[in-house]
Image (cartoon, rainbow, N blue to C red; front, top):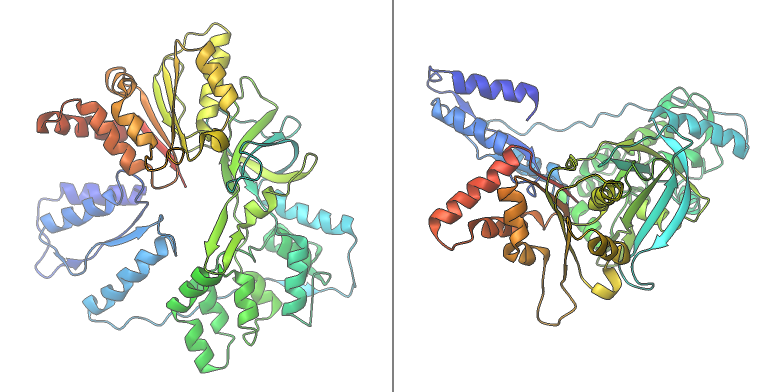
Length: 502
């Protein structure tokens, strides 16, 4: 909860006097349903208001970052549909605000590659990134398999990119130059990728730069669009019927589901809505960095980092589409460079004398490698168990050779459990199934007060928590189960249970 929200809740809980009659309220909460305390802050505030005699005029709004379509905005839009009638007010008309980018068209016909690169380096410097060389590319899954796992090694030693155990590397992808050029030539007859503009500190650039360089490096033109963009684009559409279609949220939802629509697709679909270039550059969001867990440990690999990345594809009725980052990453070769920066990880690594249980692989490889390095150098380490799950053992057992070797050489502290859900027809085994029946969960988490780390997709945390409760309870009676639930909640409350999900 934000600090001001925490203070507000404190004041509510300390208040002795009830609110005056007629005091009404409604709460809109934002969170991620894959986390254990989803919307707890919003629910606590709602409960405190009710205890003080206030009337809730509209049910709690639930903004869930896990929602596939619009994320947090989906719950907000649903809440807004009811809150204004509850207040007896008409829903205010949204007037999109666009602040055009300050630019001037240059008289120059074309920039040299060196000049363009110099300008775009100003952008990458403004967001605190370094250009790093790829020194290793290794396929971790079977060649030709429909899920592509790749290990990338990046040489960071010559850059200011020192990292700590548990950190992640945030990579800023680029759009494909040919795709950008094709789009710009189809979209506009007035300017294309070669057109030279001068920016006045927009995107951190205070120089001349080509339009192509801006669309390739800065703008998320092939990203998934949102309603805010369509609302802004609609202000440039003169036809009332077309504008009505553009402003219908179901229209955008269908375009995304059927065609995996991008910002570029919408601009081509609604070409009669033609914003000036200065406005267009302000309307399209900038490319966001993608964070990937570092699988190496600084104690053993201080000058390089390794990342384990699954190349993501998006399915729609008309086929598949690569995301912006995956489209770039799948083409990378040794010697190529990427712009990136180190980012603090979402999980606090355990000390060597703390026990741990982990599910997933990428962030846990760093923890395992760190302990193996310490143990090899005479440091006594506490037990660590890894529960690794995927679909097929032969094709998707990532880091198999290394993990099995560590389990053999360091069996006094490391235990490896594996679950492959598609190997046996009619019998699916998942990580949570193993967690429920293995004693090391109870020993490491309940008795040794160790740490639980959950890494994987958003569907994993809830069934895994249920399995942890089952393991803690041991006996199938109400008292044991109640005590097990309290023990698990204590882990989350005191930071002994952490997760990194996507």
